[in-house]
Structures are given as structure tokens and as C-alpha cells.
Length: 171
Image (cartoon, rainbow, N blue to C red; front, side, top):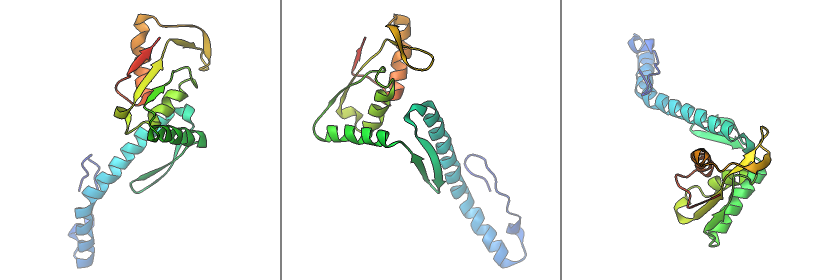
């Protein structure tokens, strides 16, 4: 039998003379495509989550355990507190959030993206760009707001904010 993703399970007992063994193999043949495909999907999810966490390693979160269809992550308390604070602000009527890549640097946009996931359409996000950073990610002197760099700045902010649009983009 085979999963949707092409992983195969060989069941030689399906031709067994012993009825109990054959019945067990038949049950496995029925269940394996569905259960195997579910396992393939969770593995793909784990790989994507792990890759995303690696991209955003400044958040300090990591994947630590997978049980069936659940992934357990470990994240610093600061991240959870920031997300909770953003949700609480929205619950109290705050709908305008102003951030910038320089805050953190990058952490403010990442926290905002996590905190506003699922309610993005209900808020206005303003962010700023053009700051320069050195190789260690610390703010360097001067600005870089050249027109040819704007697309890269926008794409990076969109990714950190987990959205496909920015309401107000400031230099």
C-alpha cells in the first residue's frame, strides 16, 4: 500500500495462510494509506515549522516534541507575554499598531505578526524602514532608503508581520 506522498508499506502477511495474520495485514492495508499520509503531513509541517523557527531564531523558540498530530514548541516567556499583550490591547479596542524593523531589531515586527495572527483584517499596521544594520544585526549609522532597496525591505517586513499588506509604510 502507498501514502498520498508515495511512501510504501510492504505487507507480505496479506497472503498468509493463517487467517489471523492475514486479517491483521488487511486492516493495516486499509488504515496505512490514511494514517501514513497523516504522518507524512505532520512531518512536512514539522520541517516547515523548524525552517521558519530557524529563519526567526531571534525569537528563541524551538520545536521540542511531536506526538501524533501535535507539535510542542518551547518559546521564551517574553514572546508569549508580547503576544498576550497585543491580544489584550486589541480586545480593549486598540486597532492601530505602529512598529519598525529597527525595534528589536526585527523583534517588534515578529511579535506583532504573531500577536495579530487571525485578526489582521481588524487592525491597521504602520511600520518604518530604511535603517542600516551591521553584520551582527545592530543598527549602524545612516539610512538606506534608496528606491531600489524598497522592495526588499517591504518583503522582509511582510514576512515578519505575517501579512500580505502594510497599511502605512514610512521612511
